[in-house]
Length: 192
Image (cartoon, rainbow, N blue to C red; front, side, top):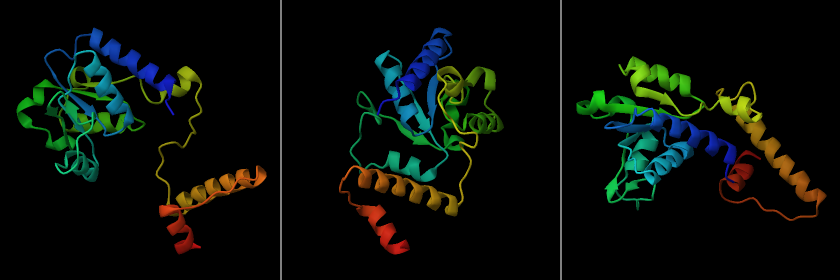
């Protein structure tokens, strides 16, 4: 499902950043290996602007993205060049002054703080693309007050079971047959 309101906000923010000229002759780094970062990479690329790299704090996500054994997708490529991913502290140091970071995440404040702690200039090198939390304000989208809070294992389990019960009741109400498979089936059997 495409979230048009989010992409509209994202594209408008990118256009404003591009208009300011802050991306010219810079090494553009997308913070996050996620859908908004990939959408932004493609949008910039479609407008003749190439990103330098992705950064993410999850070492496993970075390793998976850089895995030479997987067939690269459009996320990985700009023309023939494969885009690399790094952890923020592992970016090649020789370009330190040329980096410009673009972020769109519910963790944007933490990302900004992290980049500042690494010595990047907030005003000159770090740009928030529209502001994830402004989505609620701009489009009156519902974002729960505790969104982004780390859930306990018990809370995760409760929410998963509530979701399964909802689907079960919906299917029962409409006479639909459904099946569990893969991890959901395994979890149901394993955890009763």
